Length: 180
Image (cartoon, rainbow, N blue to C red; front, side, top):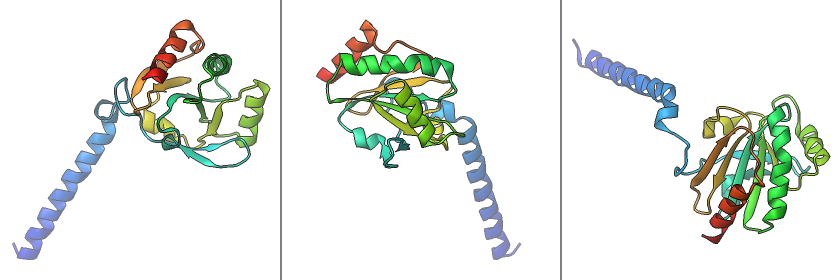
């Protein structure tokens, strides 16, 4: 075997191992890269639907308590839940609280999501991620899915499904995080 053939063999082995590692990491991503209470909130990027088309990221809310909701206009539990976020915003008017609802609608545009929010009189941040990158970043398993993120960027609550975000317990959690 020539030196060139030996290096080709080594290269093929290294490439095979790298590919196997990448496939294994992708298959086991939920186990390896969990997004759970106590973990750091992953970064995300989504467009505002307020007509500005401005892109926002989690970093834009640094130092704030963030209630991050991942939802869709076609999701009935999401629709029922949305007014409770508005009630939470009114119950806790602190400017250090940001409620950010990221729609993962693929087939409707920003105009439709904006009209949906206007119809429900929502005044918090509404964003659109039609490529659903936030799903992959947060490993969402259902809709709605909500994450309460403390000022330091750690997830303090994760909730899958509809919830009353204006409930006594949720308001108390938010107020506690705002005091920290």
